[in-house]
Image (cartoon, rainbow, N blue to C red):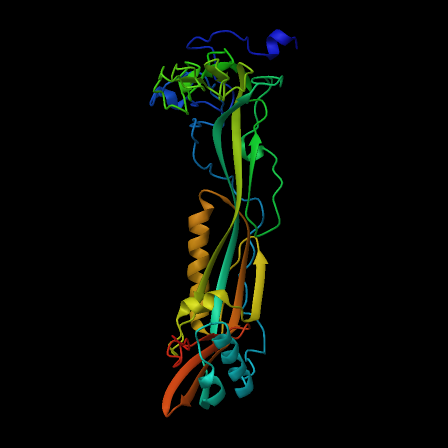
Length: 383
């Protein structure tokens, strides 16, 4: 193929310069509806079949193809005979409170050293977690300064959005990648500077001069400002007094390489369900702690846990799996799902100090403490 057939001529464009290319019909410039100053011409971007609706600013998420992997059979209930957690000892409960108090500079430790634990009661609860790892793709028209790259538009049909190769990251980790779609590139004149390579300096509005910083433009002659010699003007340092700067769009290259940019996003959607516990500890406290892992399963598409010992876990599993597959399956490709069941330890500790009763909670493998009614919260002495 000779160069004339492979490259778009570099000359002013007419309304029909860019014809339709396979899979990308309907790509038009946003300038056709919202024409800002120096905006790209409405016909700057060609139409490419397979990318219909792609406009500057983004064409929205593209529906994925039908999944190719076989559907997995329903999963049975997890088999784990060890559903209990060892009880918390008094020494461990007291040590947890001691550490909690020491992390607050104004808390006194008298309730820790003098308080008497009267009772301890476990309120262990289940947490069900569903993770859905997805890949979504969207397109946008993009451009960059032309630095000699070949214009491959129409050299051969462009691959469809979901045919473009992209390497996924580690499972269940977020990542974004932007890819120039092959065979969508064209060379155009820069729309900002009209192929001049320079544009008016915004700092001095093209005059090359600014108000003198020493006399604030007073232009005094008696005595004359020694900085501006009484002119009240100083040379613009941004453009060196020329009134023009390198075009920010084309970086002085005068031409742009325009192409369709494919944005590939991998995202891990995580949702938890905590089985309600009646001890009074706020559920938000439990979101940052870990528990004993009872069950974990990872597949392309997971199925609800059947016959779990706690019915609330089974119901949460069924509800969240349905919601995730409905919400994310339409606009993205579900690559993997993972469900986990944890048993979070919670111990309510009742104690007395100075003939009054108080309570605190020790929760999570980390043995964090919640003590809303701690009796000595300010030990500061005002002199």
